[in-house]
Length: 148
Image (tube, rainbow, N blue to C red; front, top):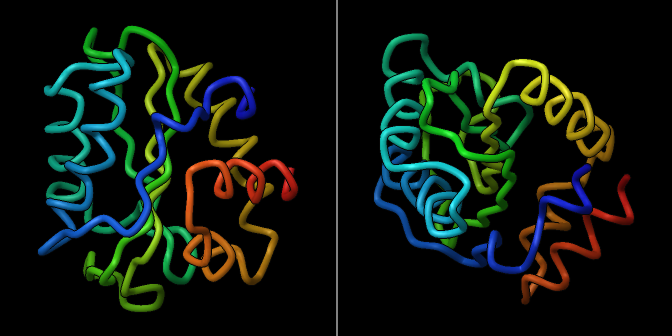
């Protein structure tokens, strides 16, 4: 599924963000421009962190912004954002974040399938360094494909 969903237009290399909210907006913007969701889904990703805390920071340096679909996701989507400067989400153990993998899915089953497939990536100890070293969207796609 990941190989089908992640395309070069859903990758941003060296993005600038003043804080975690702006970083999530970069990820959400990629999904929006690709027609995967609307802006209310990006707002929902931010609201999720505000309500539940930095639960989406899953490993050192990597966050997976997502939210529950409320009719605002048209099709499954995955994006990857590497940040020029890391941002803090407020996670005691895994801050600061350098890589965001944004996901959206129109239903819970598709959402869980995406999370399950992405979990394989986190088995690689240097995944953040490897993704941050990429100089192009094509390199990001090749790096992720090699990890799957």
